[in-house]
Length: 206
Image 1: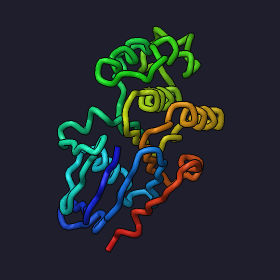
Image 2: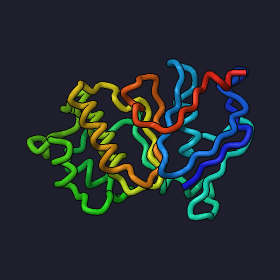
Image 3: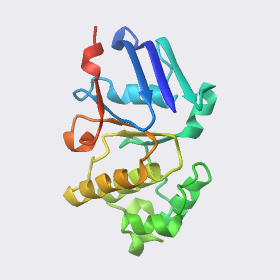
């Protein structure tokens, strides 16, 4: 999977969030989107997911040398972010089963295996609304990382995680991110320490 940006810019009302981004993302690499809070990292990630349209410029998605229509992109993207809510009335098992109706899990991963990866065996039938913030973040990350998608987008992935949770996150990336296009937006070094390439939004604040 490849994502190419040509002169991409985003504006809200009269303020340009970023301008003139030319960049080429390719599978099998890990990218970090850097910048202080409020600089537009999350907005940029939403554009890469196909959820937002650039105010100027063009973004194209290519898979196996074939162009994807923007309406098809969501099928190939897994996305985790603190602002994406879980359905809190679901139990853990129900949440995982529901997720699989839209995004299949990678080979060898099923509901029970994923619950084991989370370490939440005692919470299988517990409603999400009773989870701690750290447990919710782990679930968001696990659902995205073990989904069978070409693109994985993570926004501030270690939010609400303790050190054990951060170590668990790094191990999950090592085990389930080969041959995927991984893009992480964060200003916390622990989130993107294994990335190969770096793009700083502050460089596009003309």
